[in-house]
Length: 105
Image 1 (tube, rainbow, N blue to C red):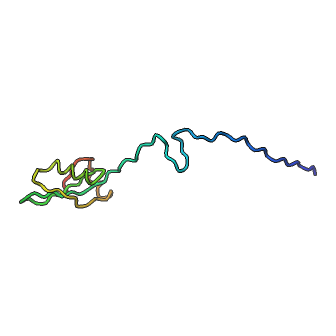
Image 2: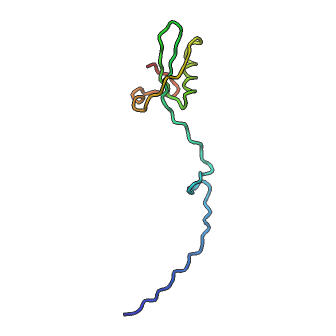
Image 3: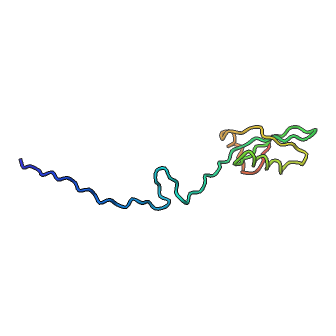
């Protein structure tokens, strides 16, 4: 049986491992990355006016403060506005809400 000569592999020449900006490197963000957008949620906002029934609106917005401002702008001056809760995605989907529009519940 002929003996095979085992030769050690030569070390590959070290390549320049510098990555281009924006390439994925573990643990770092690309330089031109945008901050993550706030996902819209559906907030429930109550509006109470003197001598009137309580009205509740569902508002799709990125934050509770924005939802309160939207309903406050759409309601009368003497109305008190306060947050009362949030809707799950499953309950909000059938309402087909548009971002920034109050929907009476």
